[in-house]
Image (cartoon, rainbow, N blue to C red; front, side, top):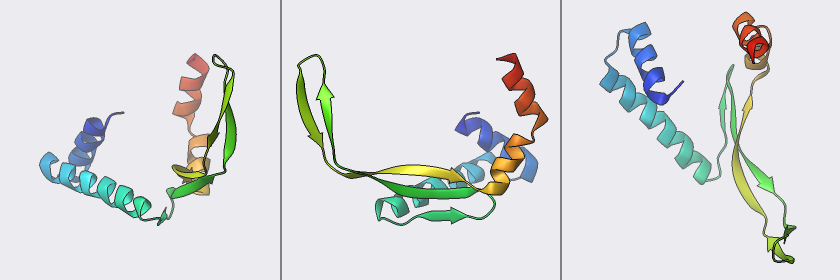
Length: 102
């Protein structure tokens, strides 16, 4: 599902115009990005957590040149779904049907 499809579905279910839903969704994403850039994590009860994960310093290898390089410690954005969200997906009959076809 694309962002446009999400916006269209929210608009249909709530009766709010697509332009207003678009502004709201874009504002949500901006708040998430800005907050995580400042080092804050975001916790949405019943949905999940957007957290910054720390990656340790490590030595990597460039096999083609037979050299090694150092990757400094850094942070990456990560999403951890809540237990209720995971349980809902695990018990979904549609997800199981789609997985069986693949």
